[in-house]
Image 1 (cartoon, helix red, strand yellow):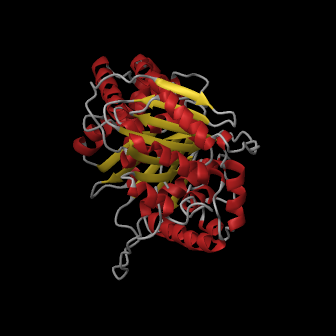
Image 2 (tube, helix red, strand yellow; image 1 turned 60 degrees about the vertical axis):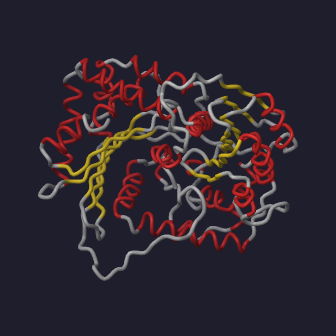
Image 3 (cartoon, one colour; image 1 turned 180 degrees about the vertical axis):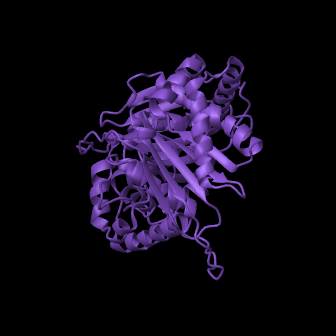
Length: 459
């Protein structure tokens, strides 16, 4: 289970070259008759290709009773078709010198391969085969479901910070499906049936619900011909209509406490904010992105300067915002107090930082510095063949379109100090705030720490 903020870190594969590398030769978009979209971005600096298949399905499409079904199906996609047996997909890619993986998020499920450029047909043949021909057997499902339940125990229930975040999300969102964990609630996993997966697969894994993204040393028309050859014969499916899932307006601050054995206390607080997809004013999300950078944009940002190094009340403090969420989202602040300090002090310190942003515009030199950092980070990440594909696939799948990535730098540069003040005043208000704290219970010294050894791909 991965958040978008982690994907950049975990999957920012090789070829991170200097930001002054040669310009891209452009992005080409194609549509097959069966509704499958193909997007090709050329990058001829190395003889490699990254191939990704993105499905418009993830945790936010699920309802209570089947939470986690998208993630388990991702695991099962490596269990074979009539043509290729269990595990054979990974073996074929490996035998051809490639790397492959997959991940599930709230808004998408994606599969990728990183190969020498002449091996692209292998990727397409395998992905087209499992798009409609997956074999979902009871035996394989039972085994994989146990792996996922163990993953949930070790990565959420036995990790105090992860558990606190999960409880925070379930409180912060009342009607949005973002309240459910991508990995699913344990009760739903325990009662999941292979027929639930079969229904999910048949309904959503279809060419007209998928985007194939290819980045690297390729010729667009040749890639289109390959896509027609391998994916063109797949039939489109009438996918279910997704009802609008709008979060109701919060009418007062919400609080919860998580008490579990832990070494350190922890604070997480969030405010309801729009994403680029849901915002009526298209400048606001970029101002929120800048606000995040002002507070938590490296060692010179305000949290690090004032709370970690200055007053030294925080061992760590962070801010995060998902510009590209499909639905309305949260701006999240979290902090771990230093020895001798507590979460109440953390909360007051963060609220004081927010108050400063509301009352005084960021001075020109700080704004310039933060913009330069945000832009440099974006340019550097986009110099990766893999990350370019990630951005294209993510933007297409949430409905924003791939061209949005090429607007990012200009949009960030256009943000003013007054706009940062405006979004702070409008969105970072107490009535739209949710706070969850971790109150540590004594650790049991006799409990041995287990290592997680199971699971496939993307976790």
